[in-house]
Length: 183
Image (tube, rainbow, N blue to C red; front, top):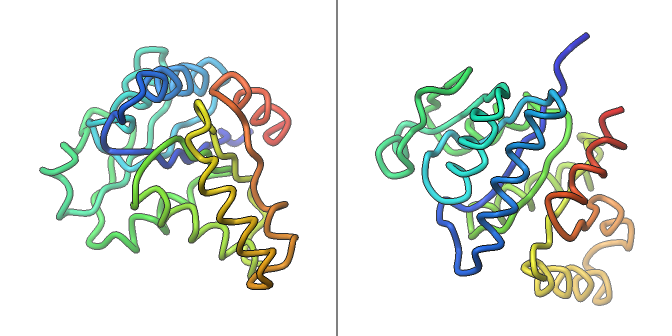
């Protein structure tokens, strides 16, 4: 049986709320405990580093993908189970997505938003049917959810857009949603 893999998009910074780091750590531990491989951006900083270290400490498999130009900036975590260095950000995103069964988005910045919107767009275009989960730690994604509603209310996307992602409040709820998605 093939190992199930969860791609995690998240910040390369810890963020202002300690709950973000707590959810990243809990998610990493959960992935390992459930026997799911972590696929992520291979950084050893911020929430990225926290989720990877937690997965490793719990004995989990880790698959990191980082573009060459970010190896120093995001402190490429070379002690992963698999560590891939790509030439470009586009290649990084493709390799991460092609090596996962589902996507989880923790709090993050422009890069996390870019990754999220790319997988939502691909889903809208019928290019995949992988589940996408937004971990809405302490309401972090509430402004984004309001924007997505505005987009559909203004006729720039069908209401089906909202069915391409599921909102979960924290890492524990993400675990339950992933169990349903990956069973």
